[in-house]
Length: 282
Image (cartoon, rainbow, N blue to C red):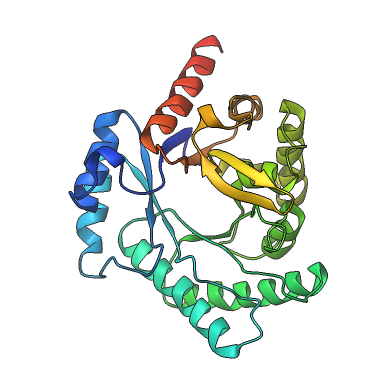
């Protein structure tokens, strides 16, 4: 169905609203002229279920599209059963409270290969994802569940791998991090046509409608021999974010763009300005 356009916002509460709480963070997003925010459960699911409806109400009032990011300590590929079990619970709990807060999508990092082949890792993550989504659907929790494309070469999360995991699985989709794919390619994937090929592949594998339901991460980034090192502001990175936006507009992509640059709202506003500039030319 799509959201009817591209909604842009920061990964977390805007820096200009730090310390004022998540409800005010959503209001500040709106005041800044942005229209999306990703709630970051970095170290744990800190949003209480009883607090979530208030967040849903504020998001609805302001028209801000919410998403949630599961805690970073998730590894569905661990050799330890306890780690896998706890990882699944973190994803499910993030989805539950995200749904109560009116969040559109849940994003998570799938894990690390260890000694597994890509093929085996795909099978393991896909099985876990099917079980997670089945449980959520049984509970009436309707939220997109999205494994993210990752920037480190030790991390599961090439575009092909994530597509193979979600293909044909209800209520799942890709969390497409262009900066991560740039870092994973060690800088070789950085032109307009490269970004368009990514969208071509998503359309070919998941269908044209998939491009109307996208959740995208963009930021500056630094990489080394093993891929991603750290996120940067756009001005400090060679990542060609402008052509990412050009590609999205060329393909009529709809959904949410979350900015993960350290400056958060400053770079998010640059993205918003670029979208408006391209729209005015159309």
